[in-house]
Length: 93
Image 1 (cartoon, helix red, strand yellow):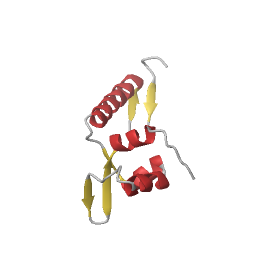
Image 2: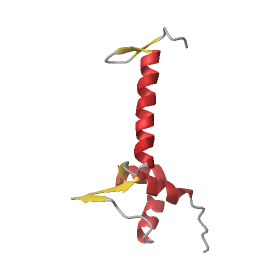
Image 3: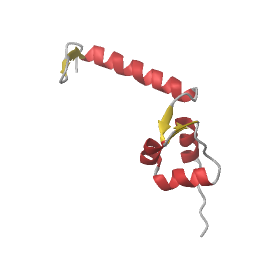
């Protein structure tokens, strides 16, 4: 795509360069939030991203605790979930 390309969305039209700049800014902000441990996701999102059984096992084993609890809702740090997901599990039956 060249710099003169235009992307048309349902509610607006932007140049390709504007789209890429906006996307890069949002990605950089999200990465910064994750690195600083500021990005939280809901329990539902955690189940969807990492699997309900894994998230429930981490909670049961005391490896994962919610960072914020409000009535009927729990939120977890994405960085904690990613670190737990990266640990190789050894299951012995």
